[in-house]
Each structure stands twice: as C-alpha cells, then as structure tokens.
Amino acid sequence: MAFVAFYFLVFLGLTWNVFRRKRDSPVGWVPLALSIVFMFIGVTVFLVIQPVYECGAMSNMDYNSSSIAIDWLLGAASLFLVATLMVPICKIVTQGSKIVGILGGIYVTFLAVLWTASLAISTKLAVDGNSDYYYGFRSDSLRIALNGLRIALGVFMVIGVLLAGLVIIVQIIRKSHLRKGITPVLFILLIGSALAFTICDFATYLANRYSDGRTVASVLVGFFLYYLFFAVAALSATIVISSPRVSAERSFPSHIPPPATNYGPHYQFVPQNVR
Image (cartoon, rainbow, N blue to C red; front, side):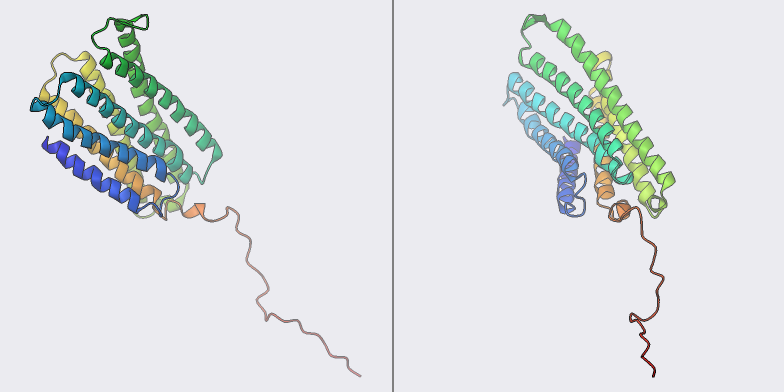
C-alpha cells in the first residue's frame, strides 16, 4: 500500500500540473487531462477499497465490483494517453497534417473498440461469475474470446506507440527547431516511457493469464513499473504539448513573403513646373 499512496501523490501532482498548463497547451490538452484524471481516480479508488477489504469490512462481491471500476479507469487512462501521443502530438510535430490526424484517429478508434469489447466481456464474467451461461454462451467461450481481445489490444497498443514514435523521430530529423535544447530528450523520454508502460501492461496480463508461479512480490513489481512508466509518459507529454519550441511552426504561415525592396523615404518626389 505504501507505493500506491506514493503514486496517489504523484498523480495528484500531475493532475494539478496538467490543469495549470491548460492555457499553454490548447492542442491535445483534453485527452491528456482525461488520461491523468482517470489514472488518479483509479489509484484513489484502489487506495480506499483495499484497506477496507483487508480489514474484512467489504464482501468479495463488493470488492470485485470495485475492481471492475478500477479496470475501466486504468484502461481508459492508458487508451487516452496513447491517443494523445498518436493524434495531437503527432499533429503538432507535423504542423497539423490532416493525413496524420485522420489515420491516427482511425487507429485510436480501432483500439477503443477492442478495449470496450474486452472490458464489457470481463465485466459480465466478473458480475455473473457463478453462472455457466451468459445469454446462451458458455463462460468458457467468452473467456476464450476475452483472451483473444486482450492479446490483440496489447499488441496493437504497442504497435500504435511504435508508429507514433516513428513519426516523431522522422520529424525530429527533418526539422531543426525540434533538435534544439532538451526537446529531443523529451521526445525520446516520452516515446520510451509510453512504449514501456504499454509493454508492461501487456506483459502483466500475459503473466496473470499463463503463469502459475506468480508471487505477490512479482505482482507488486509489475504494478509499480506500470505506474512509474505511465507517470513519466504523462509528464513528458504535458511538457511537450505546452512547449513553445515544439509548436513554434504552428503559429506562422509556411510561406513567408519576401521583404520590401523600397528602403527610401515614404514620399514621392514631384518635380515643380519650371518656366
């Protein structure tokens, strides 16, 4: 519980920071803020219900229902953070490219469909855990479908971060203003931490699904790393979308007219009539 309390303070600070930078980051602020807020609420709910359950003041059914809410919150946080990376941040570095925005939006929509379907099935299984049938389907069939959806979601989340990272790296190479100062370091930190938390989330699911020798310590390590990489990615994204240097070329037209060639006085000499 100590590390959960620590991350409660971390995400509280990130929530305050993202709202403080709202005016500096109009592009991409909404999905990033939703991501951090959902993560903060999820950690808060876990921090409240876990001690109550361990003290015996909460039934297993109530604990399972609360755990479902946490799964939805953490899943939404991860999805919105990947969406922030794939759509607004990629559009910022490509100077508002419509193609990048459309393709990124389609990909994020596909991820949202996989995420919603997988959590809907897992919610139904958790709520009706004592039943062998769900609307004519055997629970085993639903569990097989859920496993396939979760694996597909994990794989495509990682691929989405890799594609966004490729777009960002190409733009860093092409544009000199993105290579100045600590801007490239921020981008590398953002890409690396986003890739790390998506891989960590996927690996945690695979370990829970297929490993029989997991210990409490290994579970805690998985959660600690997931929260750590998510926090680093969220902080990096907040700094990136509010950085004037990153968005420097968005405020100016791509074509700058040539300077005026008339450097003389602003009057015209009119000769007098000479008799």
